[in-house]
Amino acid sequence: MPVSKATGGPGLAIEHVPVLIPAGAVKLEGDLSIPTAARGVVLFAHGSGSSRRSPRNRYVADILNEGGLATLLIDLLTADENQVDMQTAHLRFDIGLLAGRLISIAESLESRREVMGLKLGLFGASTGAGAALVAAAKRPKLVHAVVSRGGRPDLAGSSLGLVKAPTLMIVGGADDVVLDLNRKARMQMECETALDIVPGAGHLFERPEELSAVARLAREWFLNKLV
Image 1 (spheres, rainbow, N blue to C red):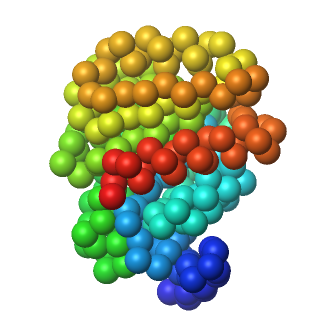
Image 2: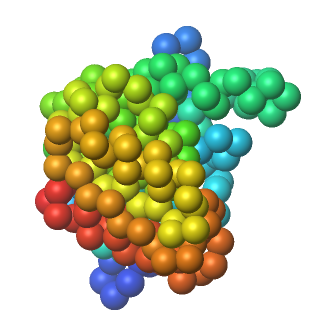
């Protein structure tokens, strides 16, 4: 696989490795970024209709890399599945399928030389947060922290009460429906949880300062829980 390197700050080199990871009968494309002396690794679960090329997730990943955290941005659907989903929108809500693939990817990361031995966190956006929480519930010894951005934790259903990983929920202050869903989901969870509200932000955290706040909060949470 081709490898590229970039500078993420003074003395910090970041290695970028394209990966192809098997998950059941399919292989999923991703981008693994590893900073010098990485202190943890974060697997991203993007939201409905998004992909590993999402500017929002890539921005957050860059901020995590600068903090010394490796990241894996990966498509949870194949190109063919994504074409179908663009028409039907049903696969993006198949939380069982997406959670299963997250688990396969997480287990694969355990044996990758570049990140072997690092604790794993999950960063889930929108519907991806529901899948991340189900994966965390099913693999409590594998997932050590979760961050949800504008997430739909309600989609995790009965798995919410089984999550052991410390979970941070970040929600926009103007995203009333999702904020209510997060508050209700948090009441069903028995693990350590926190809810951070970004004032005035909508579901997509469209203003630069709003997404910057998300990235800073996520980095602090992961550094506290994974290192």
